[in-house]
Amino acid sequence: MNDTSNFTTHTVHDKSAAAMALPVFMFAVGVIGNTIAIGALSGSKQGRKPSAFFALVCGLAVTDLLGTCLASPITIATYLDKNVLYDRHLCEFHSFLLLFFGVAGLSIICAMSVERYLAICCPYTYQRWGIGQQFARKCLFCIYLSNILFCCLPVMGMTESMSQPSKTWCFINWMAHEPLSAAYSFLYASVSFLLILMTIVLNFAVCGTLLIMHRRKIQRPVTRGSTRAHWTALSSGVEAQMMTVLVVTSMVVLGCSAPLVVRVFANQISREDNSHADLKAIRIAAVNAILDPWIYILLRRTLFSKIRRLSKRVYSGRKGKEPMLPVKSSQRTFQFQTNTHDLPS
Image 1 (cartoon, one colour):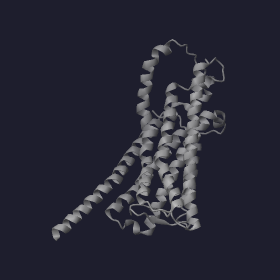
Image 2 (cartoon, one colour):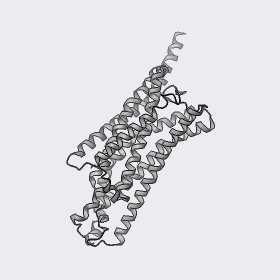
Image 3 (spheres, one colour):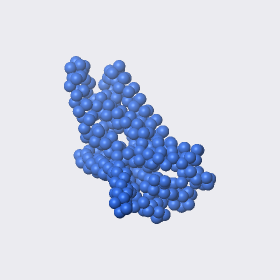
Image 4 (cartoon, one colour):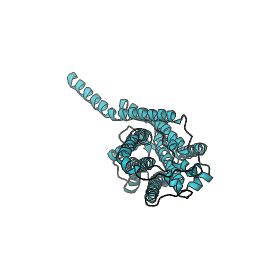
């Protein structure tokens, strides 16, 4: 009898350890990746002009790191003790963390897309508004403040936070029948959906604009004094860098955040309990914080530098036959929006 009891105990512990491996791995990778990203950003800041995009990237990396460090340990603790989230205050705090860092990350990524859209598509407006590092810091402050107030509404009584069926995470009661609770679930999903949609639309608008610029630059040689001179300042390497980063960002945002938004809408409409799908959706959303630093920092610092050198070698012969017109210093007014200080290397 004792042997059977011991075997059962060891089996339970083995299953618990195996289940805990995934959140521990995600926690470690998230902390390491965002720490490296912040270190790379800090190193690239020296000797470079501060920019709004640079400040937003720093804000995103810090946000992802804070979210990982605050939320993941609570999740890991639940695998050691299933009663951890029975504490109502801790459950509400964990729910707040998941709500806040989910929508805050989307808001910052959307702000980065807006900044790039204004810089590329509306350069005169970008310059007139004086968008820079200080402007970006104010934007980050507004994002944090508004999202804190928005995600504190459940604690204020608009809806309740509850331990989900897996007992490893807390979230709002997204299947509540009360009008106020249902309204908050729908509002949170709608805000997240609009941020995702805006990010994708703006990013593809920027990509389309860069493609048009590149095509016109090839088809129409730029003469000195032309208003199109700022197009020549957009090097092919920077164009490829920005376009690829923006497209990959859109794919990651859609792939990581959309499942959770879909689950919130689905739970409101069908009212069917599918805890496995809910758990999978929140885990996929957590992957966003892991991928962000590699997309915005490390990917650009390694891959694109090699691609640019390879492209120069392949096309050096053909490009060497084409006459190159120098760009006057007075024509560099528009270069600020795509200069390489926005893309640390």
